[in-house]
Length: 202
Image 1 (cartoon, rainbow, N blue to C red):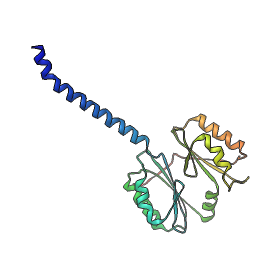
Image 2 (image 1 turned 180 degrees about the vertical axis):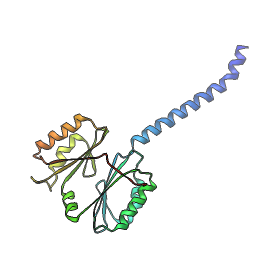
Image 3 (image 1 turned 90 degrees about the vertical axis):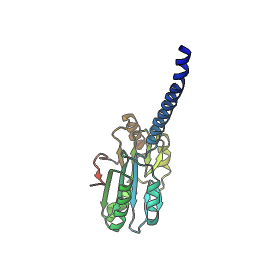
Image 4 (image 1 turned 90 degrees about the horizontal axis):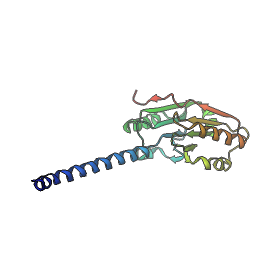
C-alpha cells in the first residue's frame, strides 16, 4: 500500500521540485538584472547637436539606439544638462526616448551658454549606493578616483567639484572622497541636491 502511494506521489514531488527550482532561478535572474540597472545616467547636450551619455560622445542620429541599449529602471536617475541655446527638438527627442524606457526620475538643467561651459569645466562626481563612483559620467572605483583626477589635464586651482550623493550612499565613502579631494588641493566642493527630480511623464 505504502509502495503504491509512494509511486503515485513521486511524479508530483518531481514536478513540485522542478517548479520550485524554476521559480528560484527566475527570482535570482530578476535580482541579478535589477542589480545591473544603471543608478545614474549623465546626459550632456551641446549646441552643435552632439551629446554625451555617461562619458560617451554621440551624434543626434544614434540617440534612440544608445538609450534603448541602456539598462535603466524605475530607480535610475537621469540628469540632463544643456545650454539653453540647444535645439528644443533635441531635448524633446531625448525625453521621448526616456519615456519609452519607463524612466521616471529625470532632472533637466537648462543653463546659459556661459554657465554650461563652467559646468563642463567642473568635475562632476556621483557617489552611488553600490559603493561605486562616477566621474564626469564614467564609472570608477573609489580607489581609482584619485588617479583619475590627477590624470585630468583640465584640472586647475580654480576647479570646482559638483558632488551628487545617493540617499543610500555610505557616509564613510563620502568622507573618504572629501578627504581625497582636499588631499588633491580641491577645496571648492559644491554639494548638489540629488533628490529633487522632474518627472518625465508629467
